[in-house]
Length: 107
Image (cartoon, rainbow, N blue to C red):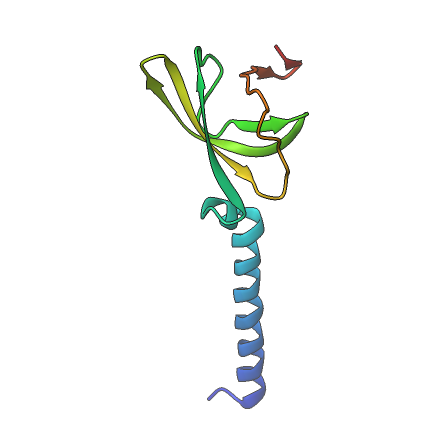
């Protein structure tokens, strides 16, 4: 038979495990961003999409502000759907461009 102290220890262990799993889901797996919490969608059309791919970083002045969700063809070139972080103010008149990044920097 399990005594009272062992039951309390198991309960504490279960609570700590559940809290740890929730924290991992929030921070490590980026669950809020995956669910679209704290982000907004933006669409951009490009004439050429070389170097543009799904899950690519979106940067503003060298700081990562979001990710590319999807890339698709349109009659005039390529359309990129992006999710940007709500906490970073980006002016509405910004011009987007595609830059290839390698181990030695932008190309």
